Image 1: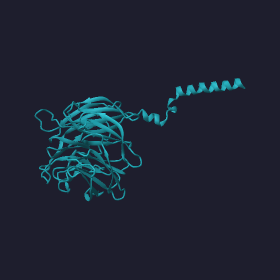
Image 2: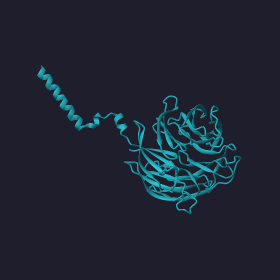
Image 3: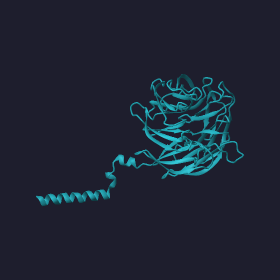
Image 4: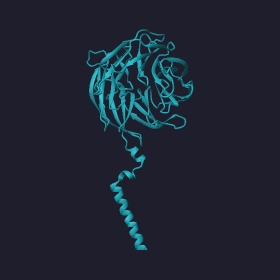
Length: 393
């Protein structure tokens, strides 16, 4: 019996070694495979404080560590980025013109290496307007939209099959002013396309208007006669957010530090004002305040908005029937002057770009409350202003 038991054990041991060597995938748990998945963070910056421009970081989700694998500095201040829906291309809005005499900015198209996430330039074109501050891509991946703060205008571009970008197809100059000292002229700030790609919503901070333009995706153009939705005088609409599942939209209002809530007509895309909620905490005194960015949680239950001055995130619960917001808490961003921030596509993490303190702070989102909690992890990046995320296949 002893000899028989010994042989049985030895046979099993040899068999297990053979199986492990021959069929390793059978012994890898889903967790282990997830841990090896490559994640990339693209960080846009102002070209100040020795910034190297556009940073490409490999991100380790297990220990929240990052490694800079590339920096790109084709022009000065790549302050805003947009990922193509197919995740093969990245578009960067640079504040610097194509040459020293060009008062406009530059839009650069990059191909993304599908194994490393590194970038290689496809082409570059003039943004046409002065000081581009936002770029977005329509859901079909055929049109890029660019907003210009100083110029107070917008432009659109046809995205080519190569992933490159055409010269500007549309250029529209806004006119007007409003009541705040910072509203002596138009200041276009963001263009957000509808989920079906039929419309794009343009937020002009200088004239207190949200304008809805018709999109002609095959041409890469936008219509010349928008529907205009005035906001409260002095509010300064900066960013715009459409709920992915509900017929509601949210406008981040920079000058009044408020969030405007709108109902969206499913057929026409027109906006109907519903309510406005404050972003600032009454417990914090600050001489300067300016709302910066706005995002929803992955499940659409929570809305986050960043405050510069108080340097925090305002956290709201989204009523899933009415679309109305209820303030839950204010969370310090762990730095100064939070600009844009990124809600992790997995719904677990939140990254905040604190421009004045030269850091990107990582938060973990609580499963039940939706409240971001500090992980104590900070990435040192000079003058960060935008964060994009990519999961390599």
